[in-house]
Image (tube, rainbow over all chains, first blue to last red; front, side, top):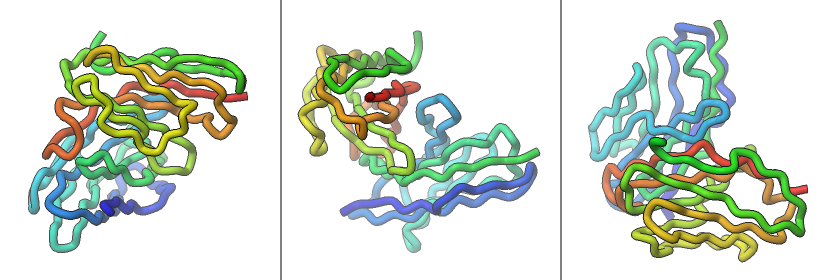
Length: 107
Length: 116
């Protein structure tokens, strides 16, 4: 069946470091792909999305490209901030979520 | 109020109690969802409602009973829970039900449930 595999955390980085969180998927057809973020004490909120192959989603300095050939949707940010500390979830459009990756950014 | 709201934010209940969680969305969406979020486990989809009709029930024990009286409100009735049911329960809504392209979800802040 359809599934999402996300890199396990936790991930700890220093401020201004480069971030990559890997996400790969297994699905029939051509699903839309999402990254959600969950800040402490809050629900999930949409960070970015891509609806077809080669689409690049971007928001708040984060980017992810829908790679059909590698079935991947890796999240990247060139320079993280302390305020980016949160849990990040990769998801398919049928509401199948990855396990989440906790990111901690230290000043 | 905007977005998706949930009440209460925190709930402690004994195994013999009956309680209800409430979710309300102010976005004009047609689909609503209940999720369970436990520590170190993937997000678990529990129930899906589309236009007030339950369209999915993912093998959830009968001690959890959902109710969707209209497209803006969703309840989760709880009775005879077990300690392993302690978790964060998240409500979400979307314009259309799952599997529609680009159909992102909007989440509430969750209810932190502790079963003693």
